[in-house]
Figure 1: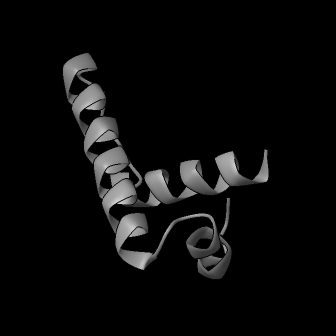
Figure 2 (figure 1 turned 45 degrees about the vertical axis):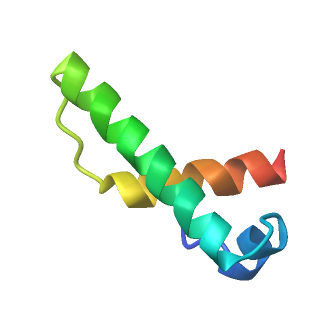
Length: 59
């Protein structure tokens, strides 16, 4: 997803701090899985995590 609307992401979290924690946790999981598999991630894990959370909201 290209530039998800942060306002919509915050509305689905309790507050912006919870959103930051959720994004960080998801990004760490993505990075850990890629490291275990030996994959090279071109895009930053935080960007992938934001896109993942935004797609979950849209579903």
